[in-house]
Length: 125
Image (cartoon, rainbow, N blue to C red; front, top):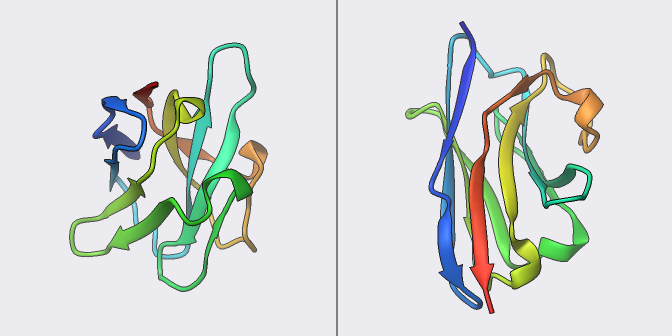
């Protein structure tokens, strides 16, 4: 059974940092793209950051460029999202997701097949 399990969310003050983790199991993701999405109350789920499991280029939504970093630890089968200089507008439930095959910089929810259950990130002002 394929599972993506997020952890690391919590409450932090503006300007602080959090590192989210996404532990993957149940299949090999070497040919997949991994992405982080977020969904704030009353808003649509939006793409945040993406990476190929095999390494290579990363891509981000403009609002997090220079503050967030996505990375992969192949030995741990885990994807991370390091979030620095957090702002109240970063408050959302954060989800990790994986594609079934290699795509070119996917940013749409429709392009991702596997999803985690989400982890809450709250940034206070």
